[in-house]
Image (cartoon, rainbow, N blue to C red):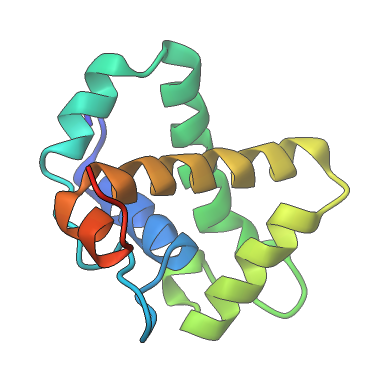
Length: 126
């Protein structure tokens, strides 16, 4: 996205892939080319959503470092640990973290359903 560092985009991609992983019975986000999605999101999303996505990326990348059971950044976690972490954030009593998790899920779904191949794989006819 506009103004994002390449490393931030890699962190975001890992977070999104963990949010909607490839599963045996359906397509997920890891196989989706986001080259078209990012410019559209940067152009269409309100500033608060873009800010929230960046805050989510930074928070969820580094928060596992200080949480018991992880002690590593998100990118260094196993797939099971990533899943557990995101589930934990989605169910936390901390409103802000829960909202950041919801923002991540919404963006992941936008990206997934923007891709025609993903829609076909999921049985959604455009």
